[in-house]
Length: 130
Image 1: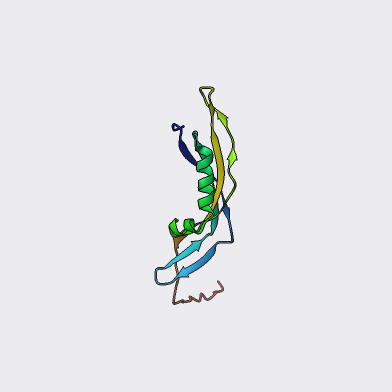
Image 2 (image 1 turned 90 degrees about the vertical axis):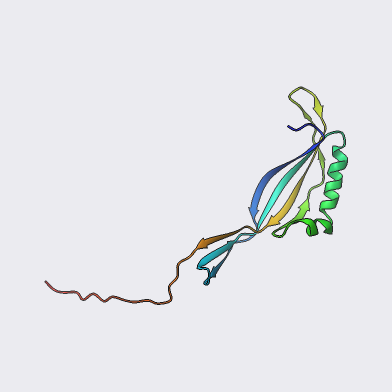
């Protein structure tokens, strides 16, 4: 683990928010699949000022500011309140830790090649009695 003071991010889970949407792009001959997903990230704060850092991040995460600074395709949804969860290190020392869970939505897109046809032909095979 890094030396305190530090912040550690851990992905907890991803949850599908709706059924994936499927669109066909005729000019590119591909199908696009879009799957809106919620991702939960645990944020651990270590060090003597961990509680203040946790409260500051939780407060800012809940404002309009975060929706403007996150990149396109990912937006914050909500965050939990901070929880103090101290731990004992490998050196048997008490370490101050605060943690919260931040939830965000992102919309991964996958493009898959698709085949199509604009003409069709048929072959008629006559059955012959032998």
